[in-house]
Image (cartoon, rainbow, N blue to C red; front, side):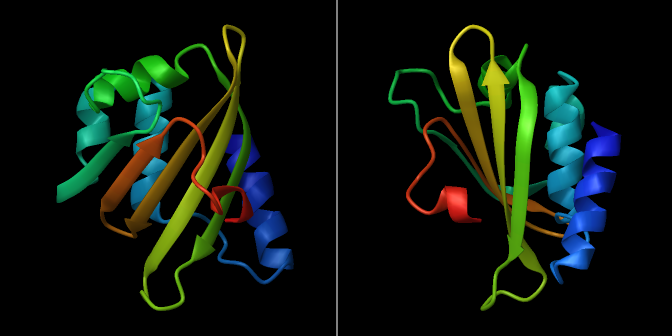
Length: 129
């Protein structure tokens, strides 16, 4: 996965985008994909919002998110700087999962903290980020 992030960073630089997603988002995603919920908590803001958009009764926890992406392969990652929030960015990820097809993860973060994590069907506009 690190090689993929490096290749994306090089491409983003060529396109004039920020070279990488916010550091907090990268640390969070790496921890979730490794199945390490304790490490995933480190970059979370005290008032982080966890949103499970699948519409079932599963509480929105890091453990539920870990189960959601477990066994899936990251296929796409995109990010953008939020124009009216300097130092903040949105990160959208798409995974392919053998058991259900696509899985989606959306993160809003500053360099130091993850502010919002949403997983499940993408919200309108997530694909464009």
